[in-house]
Image (cartoon, rainbow, N blue to C red; front, top):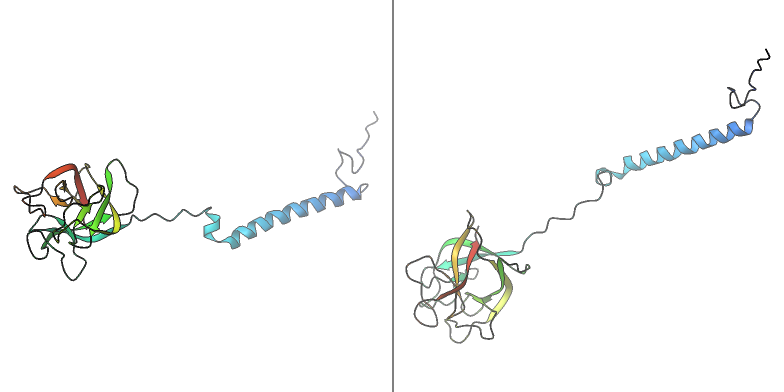
Length: 205
């Protein structure tokens, strides 16, 4: 039987002695592949943890809010206590603060359970609703005069350990007052406040 030995360099053979060009080509390809893998590994090593972990997350958005909004024990209204004086109270003199330090969101989108257009009055320092053609009644005389942020107040949601419900709109003076006592405070339009609309739930610190 004529059993022929495979030629070196053939598909069945074990050497490349008869085809040096093919061996050179294979060595070149292997070196190029190894070089690319090494370059990728080096790039990963020098890129640092942030690049290795992929795209960074966007910064967490912080809701804008303002503290120092307080309950007045004389008129039951909400006023800003961030100035040396305490504004003008319809019960006479300045407002007299008590209770929680409310931290109110402002300049954020309105939702089905949060109403915008609540503003600071720079005459009496009270909070009033700026959503009607007129601006209600200010204790200093005339209408309220808005300034500053556009507050967006949550309403008709559950009260929790850091919020208080029973804050209501007065349809006589357009101010915000606390409706949690047997009487309803003092309204600059005369008599007591008169509630209407939503049950506002104000967050506090």
